[in-house]
Image (cartoon, rainbow, N blue to C red):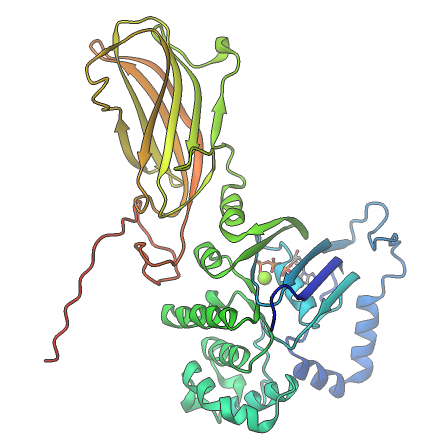
Length: 444
Ligand SMILES: Nc1ncnc2c1ncn2[C@@H]1O[C@H](COP(=O)(O)OP(=O)(O)OP(=O)(O)O)[C@@H](O)[C@H]1O
Ligand SMILES: [Mg+2]
């Protein structure tokens, strides 16, 4: 399979729901067919009432003219495309439209307007149901899913043992799926979706269910699927997992696409959203800048090792915090210092300027830039806030103190060399140093 062929193209897709009418979606074609066979007329009527928006005036872009409060936009004019072999994350807050988008891509529900083109065999694992028929046994469901994916019985048989081994539900293979716990269902469903060689694998929030070991297995499997040149679309609220697994990320909010781009960058922006500070603060007008008798603050920046101002930093990279200030009246010993807090308000550390050049040295009047470097693999993942201070020494007189003046986010990944090893979940603690580990082995 060559790269750069489009696998999924989403073009101006909108989905509206009528408020107060609950759509009964079937999580899988098998279930949907079963439902239709059981009560065709009832379902047909329901289908008509749900998807008939004749009374709503859609313009040529498929968008509603005027304001209406009886409908809800689950998706609004969303477009993006995914190339073959891309592993793409879809992120956004609760109700952003992520699951709706995946249901449309899996053909479980149609878009109200817009087009979806898919090149390749899709296998999906969606959040609510797990793609199984509840009355059938685990074994029967595996074969049914294979058939739906267009595989021959022999092909499914060849994969069967692998699926069972991965899912760890061997004892329950001949039990109807309705008797499974939700964890067991998800295990089997993921095993089926990932092993039946789909060309496009769609996974919604699988990491929310199941224990840590299973989550890790799923992550590894998805990584393998991606490496084999197949396409993966992955929805998750677990940002370290998204940024390490995905090449690209599409960010949705209230049904609309906010932006898309390289995974780390978009995840960093997403984490900082709603946080009312920036990586750069300037006081253009000196008269409004924080100041004391001897010094005045002019700028605070968060920089990368290359000197660029950026608000998101890979956990392995150093982070520079820089203050630019004027000494208004020379002759004092100055002590610039920063405090770093995390998003729980916990003071992670205080750092004071101990540059030997200025140690106990009076500073002449003029402009100064003081930078401190926080090494990589020190701060834990997540947002951090900087307090910027400067005081004179002996007597100790505070010249300025700016709390939460700039902020930045540390983004994690599962590359070797960080504290998390290959653990996908959140690591607690205010710091996350990559300490040295050694494990010795002996046979007895
Ligand atoms: N079947 C439905 N009938 C009516 N409204 C729906 C239906 N499915 C979703 N919605 C609404 O559409 C919006 C988008 O929901 P969706 O499930 O796609 O969000 P999400 O991004 O997956 O959220 P979460 O992170 O909580 O899973 C929500 O406001 C939701 O209430
Ligand atoms: Mg969802």
